[in-house]
Each structure stands twice: as C-alpha cells, then as structure tokens.
Length: 636
Image 1 (cartoon, rainbow, N blue to C red):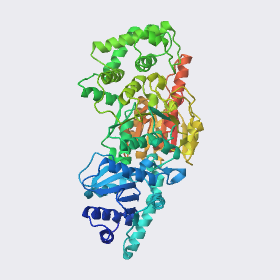
Image 2: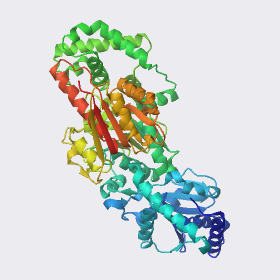
Image 3: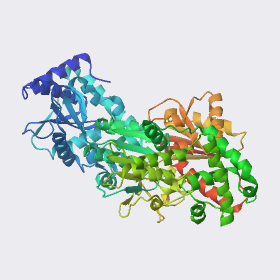
Image 4: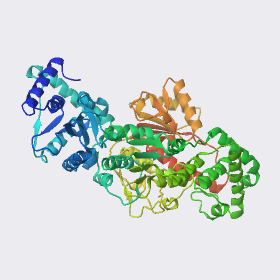
C-alpha cells in the first residue's frame, strides 16, 4: 500500500523544496527530489554536500543499497570504478543478521541521466527512477535497511541525510502504512528464499571468497546449502566491475542457468547484458553454429545407434552380470566422457565409482561395443553430446575466441565430464580469476568419477571450502545427515554434511511408507495439507517415469503441476515436478520426495555401486528443502 494522492503531493512538494535549496542543476535537482520522495515510504537517502569525486547519493531500502551518480553524459569507467571503491569501502563489513556482514559486491552502482552506457554500472534515464523501487526486487526488511543506514551514517563524511514525511493530517494513513510495513516484513521473513538476503549479506567467510584474487583456476566446495553458488554470483559481479569482457555461467544441468540468470539480474542489473547463463552443451552448439559447424545430435537416433551396437555385442557382456544401462553408462560416462581415444588408454585407467572390476580382456569387449557405436553414429551422420564438446574444444584450439571471457563460472562441477572440463579450461584459460569451479562430490548424481587434475586444471593452493549450511532448517538437515556420503573431486577428504554447521532452527520432516496403491492418496493428502504455496514447492523423484506417474496422480486430483525443467526462478502457482537430476542446484521452501522400487542388479559389485549412487541422489533430494520435507517410500 502506498501514500494517498494528497499525501503523495505533499511529499513531492517537500522533496522539491529541500533539493531546490541545495542544487541548481535541473537534472540533479529533479533526480534527487524523486529519490527523496521515497523516504516517506521508509527509504534512507544521503546526499553529497562535499567535493565531487564520489557518489552523488546513497540510497538504502528494502530493494537494496545503491550508490547513485547523476550526470549527463554518462560517466566514464574510471569515474565509476572510483565510486565503486569508495562505496565498497564504506559499506563493507557493516553487520547483518546472524553474524553476517554486508558484502562489498552488494552495492549497486547506478548512473542516472542521459543515454545508456555499457560500463560496469547500471545506467538509467531519469524518467525510469521507479525501476529502483520495484516490488519484485525486495529482499531486505525495513529494520535491516534502517540498520544499514545507521551504520553507513557513522562512516560517511560530506553527506547530508535527508527525509520527508507525510502530512500530519494523514497520520492515520501513515500509521496504517507503517503497520503494513511491519506486516510486510513479517511476511518477507516467512517466505524469503535463500537467494534473497544473500543479495546484501554474506557470512565473513563467504564475503572473503567473493572478492579474493586468484592467480589461476580456483575451486569452491562444501556440503549442500553452504552458499557456494551465492559466492560464485557475487564473484561474477566483483570480477565484472573490474573488467570489460563477457561473463559466462555454465553447468552440466540445463535447468540451472535460467534460474541463476533470474537471480543475477536482480543482484547485478548493470551486468545483465554482459553475463551469459547457459548449459555447456548449449554453449558448444551455439559456438559451433557461429563457426558454420552443425552437428546432428538427435537423442532418439543416437540412442538407437547404441541399441544396435548392443545387440551385436551383448552376449559376452551380459555374462558379466550388469544390464544394458550399465554398459551404456560405461561407454558414455567413462570412455566418451573422459575422452579416451585408444584401447590401451582404456585398459590402463582407474574406473572410479564403478563397482564391477574389468580385466584387460573384458575391457576389450567393452571397447568393441564402443567402436561399433561410433561406427553407427558415423554411418548415419550423427554425433552425441560428448562429440559436441570434443568438436568445440578442437575448434577453439584451432581458432580461439575473438573476445575472451573475463570470468567463467562452472556450477555443479562434480557432474561435468572430463571432456566438458577440458573444454571449459580451453574457454577460460589459466589466467587470474578467469575460471571458478563450484561443486561438491557428495552431490554427484551421475555414475563415474574423476579428479580435477585429470582434466589438467591446476587448483593447488586455490581450493576453498565452505562449512556453514544456510539453506536447510535444522530438522531437515538432521534428516539429510543420516543419508550422508562423502567424496571430493581432488581425492582428498571432503567436508561431510554431518560436519557442517547449522544456523537455522526449526524445520518439519514427515515420513510415509506404504504400498504403491496407497501412494496416490497419501501424496495428494500431503500436498493439500501444505501451508506453503505450491509455487514454492517441488516434488522430486529418482526417474522420469516416476515423475510422470506422480504428476498424473496430482493432476487427476485437481492439483496443477509444472515440469521442473521449465522452472526459471520466478514465482508460480503450480507445484513443480521432476527428477533429482533436474532439481540439482535448486531449492524450495517445501519438497516432497517419492522413492519407488526399481529392479536391483544381481551382481553384488553393481548393487554396491547402485546403492552409493542412490545415496548421493537421496542426499541431493533432501537438501533441496528449506522449511518442510515429506519423504514417501514404497518398499521393494
């Protein structure tokens, strides 16, 4: 709720008079008056009265903190970099909730005036001031904003804090507004996602990593919910302000880039046009298309090419015990995923996380399957997704990018193949702050394994570990710790989820066990009992077939759903449904997990491999929930 028309007019007159007494330049006078009007609604404004050379104003409110420069034409980069340094120094370290501090990269640089600019700041015409106050960018409470303003006031020199108020005869309306602001704060505190307050506040350990300079490729690891992606996005903004090249955020999971693009645009609107959020396979396809290279990677046809190869070679491999899926994974994740080009190389490697041991003769049989599959692809003019990455690497080696990336961030790095990581190293290079890998071996949801050193990415002395869980409430974290698995991408001991510190109390976990016939009723009842909106809820399964089955249960009960792979981070009114592979890197206030029985392999070694993989997948599913988790199991 805003001010009444009468109160708004009164506030405008006050603001215009106060600013007119201090400034003669029309652009500055009108812009600062427009900002000052918002102080009647709880915003805080400090206007520069001293010598030029820094921000004309600092603006603080529930949509964040802003350093404002008013000028036409737009300022040059050197000027805005000086403003950025000054602003970061003044805001850095101001206290926030739960021992957090304001991040240096939390301050949004805004140039208000003439035509837009491509510099490392947000350029707005004076007529579009309202974009600073959009409701969908709110991520602070009124109390937090006031505390930040108070802390900044103690550090600023040469600034005057200005404020206007609604007229006394509108006191009732203003009191109502204040009461509603309190209610809004309470609502915000109840529904805010972890990607809300992180736009301003970071734990000191996170803040240090967000602005640290690295001499080469670096890696950030840590258990689920420790804010790895948060740090990565702040680093993108930090590096973007100090460079002019494009920025790339990529991952193996195609559903994750759109979500993080949405949040990054809120964090750093000034860099939105320079930042590219895309899955690695989509990047490779677009890159090759730009070079006039088109590859046919039709999934149905490539699956058929493998099926025909399997028919030809299945007899000796089936005698070893595992099923079709096992050998397809062996070819895709181990041979092609690691870029193995010769039988000799395949016979010499350690097949990490593969339960079935293969001698040299047995590996020769697998190699024959791989060769026939490759021949089938070539005969039909096909390429698979591994070929797409390999071809992009070769093309980059032949002719590098015309405009190198200033920063490349790889999220969920543990699920990248070695082929993908080698491509990423070629894209980013080994220069300072150019490649950041974010991942946690405990959350790998695909078979196989490797070390970063296998990809030729040197991170010695540049590996960081986060240890505090900010996402999951204590009850959910306790549940997830029971299904904990530990691993590390570099072969060293990782940090187990059970060893992570927890900062959020509360959390509700409900478990259900029953027959498949009872599942529809139990699942429907669980959804209807939710007090959390459906748009902030996800249902997670461990296979596409199970996701489709559960979606039909809900739709037939009149509960609207939406495929998880279409989620882009915006609020919706449908319950999201998808597999754990699509849920990776995401989080929701409420999560329902359904675990249905599937055939178990006969071979003990493959059984162990399957149990280990399922354990990591269950860990990922459980830790997507922030406030509420429903865990449903249909036993075998």
